[in-house]
Length: 493
Ligand SMILES: CC(=O)N[C@H]1[C@@H](OP(=O)(O)OP(=O)(O)OC[C@H]2O[C@@H](n3ccc(=O)[nH]c3=O)[C@H](O)[C@@H]2O)O[C@H](CO)[C@@H](O)[C@@H]1O[C@H](C)C(=O)N[C@@H](C)C(=O)N[C@H](CCC(=O)O)C(=O)O
Ligand SMILES: Nc1ncnc2c1ncn2[C@@H]1O[C@H](COP(=O)(O)OP(=O)(O)OP(=O)(O)O)[C@@H](O)[C@H]1O
Image 1 (cartoon, protein in one colour):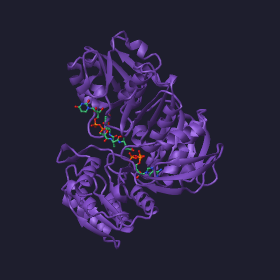
Image 2: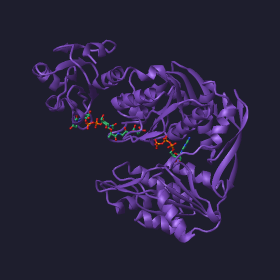
Image 3: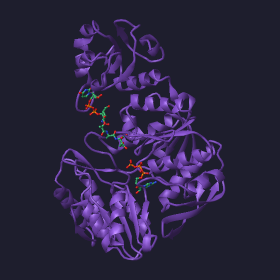
Image 4: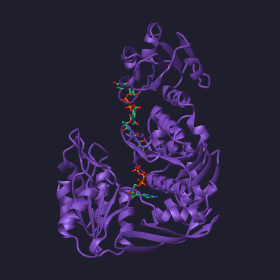
């Protein structure tokens, strides 16, 4: 593609060098540059991408995009333009998104899109909508924490919302594969880092908001976290929002889209209090849908929060013209890897793998499981290293409050000693009457819980959900809670 045509719909300040340069790729990482690549210099949190402009040119970059006013750009703009074309822009992050969309031919513009934001429930809701679309015979792609899915193929992602060039490439692949629809999670970082700048979504969903992702390298305050998420409602046509959430007013205060609501109280899509079911392989629930659609809905997933996730999915489906009948049939079969996933219900001992990894989601999860009246609720968990310490106290508190007994173990300790993370969790426990044992090796902790489990117990192994690795001291080794639970069940039950 020729630079001038790439820039024809993208705002820029000036070009130095030829506007007829050929562009064969786009990236913001000098290590990905190949001959002909456009390199966009992003001033980051740790490094300034402008520092890598010369390295990118050395690797064959044909165009370098720099930010007006950046000290390195000021110094090097002229000399660099002797070897590569230089484009000056006001915001490199925004330009990166606009240019990536232009490079891949604006794939989202010809697709029906559903973007989901919120602290919790994004992945579950995305799977539900994707399942409903597939059930309606619609070819749809899915992008989120568990990866991207294009035509039955899984692409691993390093972010919930990929970097702009990766996102646009995936959307282009989806379009090329014949997808007419895409469902994607948009994280608050996705907005803050402008990974979706300039994109317009057909539908935007807000699940809920609570304190999370606040700290160094993420959001400086709750206000910023809320603001970033609220940007969804100035970039979609129809907003589908959880009316029960205490922040819904603030989230939609600047909305420019049409709004529809869902919730347990009065809303466009409303659910009756659910009735809980359990059999030997499933914990589920059933509710009555009312409002814009009426139906009885059965979910093979437990808890009121999954009812809310399903309301969001039904609302999106209905807005897309898919009947509640089709939606409820798809929801009957829904399976979300690592989210309230029942590994086995043998001998009426339920072993569940879940991704709850903060206080709020842990409380929700354990409270939900209590409603199924287990003999004992046993919780196996740890906390990540190099992440907020507050999570550790909070998760300890939640387990101490709701589980009958807990096994504290390792999670992804990253660069921290497992023992000091566990000590923090224990501090949270000490605020409660909760009983616990400490078994730092996660494999042994799971085996211990399963071997001690009795008929009627629920064992919740939480924090890592779908992950197939454990990260410690800079190394990732294969580890799956599901596999370990299955092995322990074979050995002990
Ligand atoms: C906080 C955050 O979002 N950080 C992102 C940000 O990093 P940064 O600003 O620190 O980048 P940097 O390391 O300073 O580098 C600046 C620029 O120099 C470039 N560079 C750097 C080194 C080099 O040799 N060559 C080079 O070109 C980098 O590619 C980058 O463009 O820009 C990087 C590249 O664009 C991202 O990879 C990085 O995500 C980090 C890894 C991350 O972990 N992000 C998490 C918090 C995240 O995004 N999570 C959300 C889910 C959480 C939520 O719900 O909000 C997600 O969507 O996954
Ligand atoms: N609507 C909800 N409200 C509160 N908690 C929820 C909700 N849906 C799911 N959860 C809990 O949060 C965990 C993560 O769910 P899910 O992956 O669907 O959310 P997410 O928004 O994608 O999360 P994350 O940002 O952590 O990846 C689940 O394992 C469950 O314990």
